[in-house]
Image (cartoon, rainbow, N blue to C red; front, side):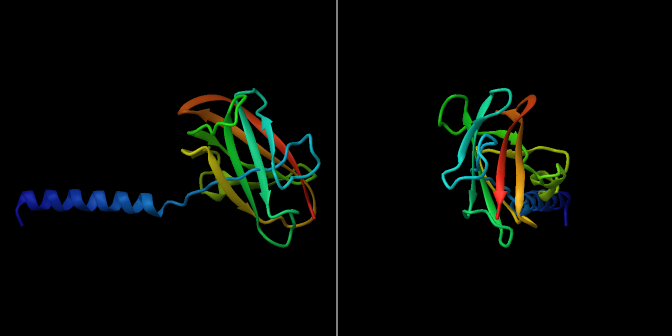
Length: 163
């Protein structure tokens, strides 16, 4: 094999490995839920601004009512401030704490990126979680960046009653 063939083979191998790596990377997405001003997540979800007002967050839990015997899907939609327009390119996490304040879930940990924000290009994600027992839980959605620009972290906080 001559040097040109070796170089070409190497480039093809690197590109193939890169493409396979991208395709094999798990994709995490979210859904809508309820605001902490409400006692439980509603079927239509709740919209709430982040603590700093940079975005609105719509959160919905499915199925309703939320139970502890089967998985719950949390759909999160990030929307531009004061509108219903989905905001793309958000760096975020989703964290769940039990009634004692102990963190029981982090989406970034589920994705293998503990301590690092997740990114959604679309502005809408769905994340699964199975609650271990009934009770009140808090769901916090911290936002760390918008359109590839870091921001001072701010969050939208919701309360869910699990049956």
